[in-house]
Length: 209
Image (cartoon, rainbow, N blue to C red; front, side):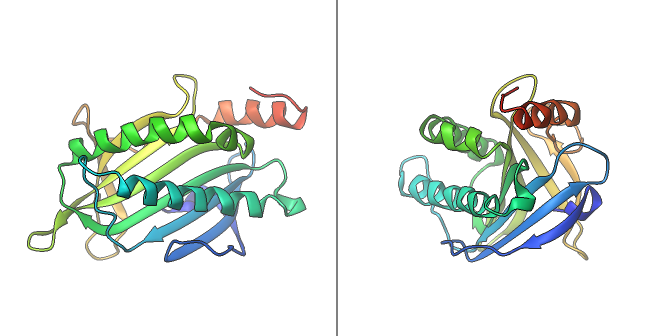
């Protein structure tokens, strides 16, 4: 994620997690709005994504809760109080599934995750969770990347969107995205800036929006 394009970043110390890689940043937006704590995790192990099993869901839930724990720990810092939270999880092991089928699997998982941990999500002011999964097999190699995002905005709480992401083979950075539902190319959905500003004002007053 090219966070430096939208935020002035300050690295915060991560706590121990089950993810192989964890980074935490405090981002001050270059264009107004409130500060955002970004918990960025990566897992290189195979989760065994399979509709017929649920052990992958237990592991995925644990990884996302690790991200929540990073946000919770970061917000103990006085400079971070009042900041919103975002969790990014990159699953680097190849998932041998169709992008649309994997989207449906993650969407069902998200409903259960939000039902169980909704109070924690709201308490940490999490407005976006993104899970990136590499699609393909050991024999065929990587065939693309599914960017699965959950955002809270005007339209819907914890709205799920799926994008097929193409990366630059030289730099490894994302080049373009294709919406799974419409097939159109567009940029990833981000939390509404105006809405985030209203939420920040409400939270400082001890209320919600």
